[in-house]
Length: 82
Image (cartoon, rainbow, N blue to C red; front, top):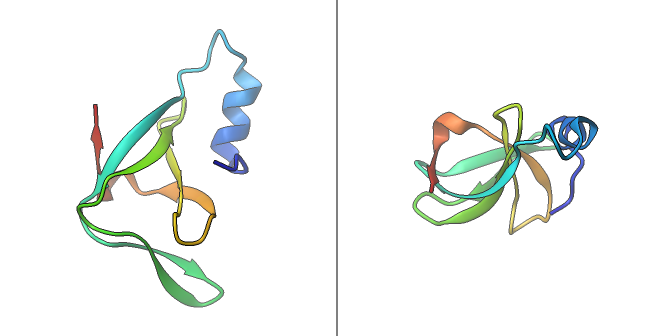
């Protein structure tokens, strides 16, 4: 997973003793789309299990399997599996 978001950078800046980021698995409650140059692209399908990272700041990022791009996922649109 590419680590380019601000949440990734903040986790690295915290250092190992303060970081609480962890890998997670999640299921979208509905199809999730991301904007790509003015077009909405389906990146996560409802009901499918995906992998992501829950960061120390509470944000979740994941890499779209279709596009290979990592970005934020709205936590209100997913169910995090434990």
